[in-house]
Image 1 (cartoon, helix red, strand yellow):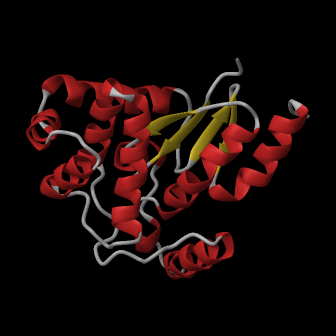
Image 2 (cartoon, helix red, strand yellow):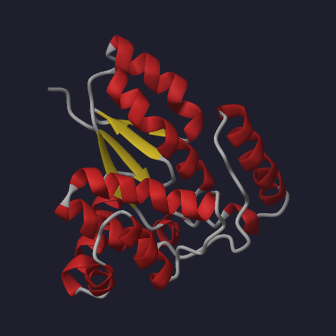
Amino acid sequence: MPSPIDFYFDFSSPYGYLGAQKVEALAAKHGRTVAWHPILLGAIFKITGGRPLPELPMKGEYAKRDFARSAAFLGIPFKYPTIFPISSVAPSRACYWAMGKDAKKGAELVKALYKAYFVEDRNISDAATVIEIAAGLGFKADEVGAALNDPAVKEKTKAEVDAAIARGVFGSPYIMIDGEPFWGVDRFEQMERWLSTGGW
């Protein structure tokens, strides 16, 4: 069976959100699955010198327009969050914990958290919000709450971010197909051809 498509993303990334709505269909079309990898762009920016788009003069204002325009172009619901950007530590920990218990439900949690932030304008950096969303998918609220402060879950999240950095991941979404990297939701057309032809 072909290897999974590795999908690296930050929960505070609008383009990561858009990519998350598309990547499963792309993978399924080519007989693959998706390996979800929440990352923390804050840690990566310390290495690359990057900053959140809204903080960049001129480019930040353009990005706000492009988020909404890109979502409309793709037919994906989107609302610019009241609080942006946010810390993605809590949702990332919750997802690594959930995926460790049930990969399919962990993927559902990824999409539910993204929807909560970029459609419902809920602050998913808040632990109570994360717990509530996870509980809505059938996870036990007390177990999710405990997981967010579990040293093993904290270490798992840190190890995943470190592994992503070691692999060269510098943005969101960042997709790896058989070792070939693609950055950005606007690379899906290239990814489609790559998967269809085996590369070029």
